[in-house]
Structures are given as structure tokens and as C-alpha cells.
Image 1 (tube, rainbow, N blue to C red):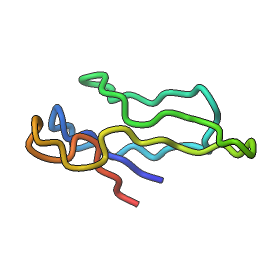
Image 2: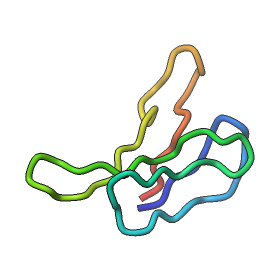
Image 3: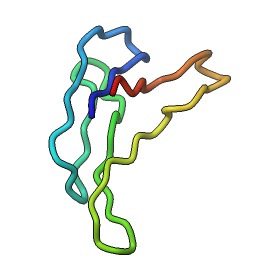
Image 4: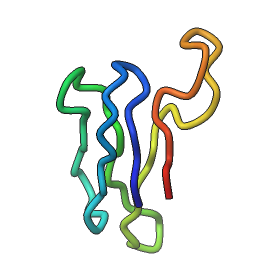
Length: 67
């Protein structure tokens, strides 16, 4: 999975490693949280992407999912 920070305008696309619980990936420029490793009730690790939907206060999508 790849994500991009739209808060600071950093054009760098971040490729996420395999998800693991309690890992947090942040933008290297503005430190916006891009992804959080979490675990579902079956014990499977996955990436939670906060702010990946339209945010009225921001005027767009703060964290864009590329693929």
C-alpha cells in the first residue's frame, strides 16, 4: 500500500511495509500520522489510514491512498 501526505504538500509517496500492530508511520516533514498498524479481532494485522476521507476543515483529503 502507498500513501501520500496532502497536509504539507510533500510530493513524496510512502510505501508502507507489511502491517504490524503498534507501528505508526508519519510524514517526515510535518509529522502527520499517515498510517497506524492495528490488529483485528481475529489477530490479523492491517493498516488503519486516518483522515483518508474528505475533511471539510482541511478542504480535501489529508492522507491520500495511492494504491
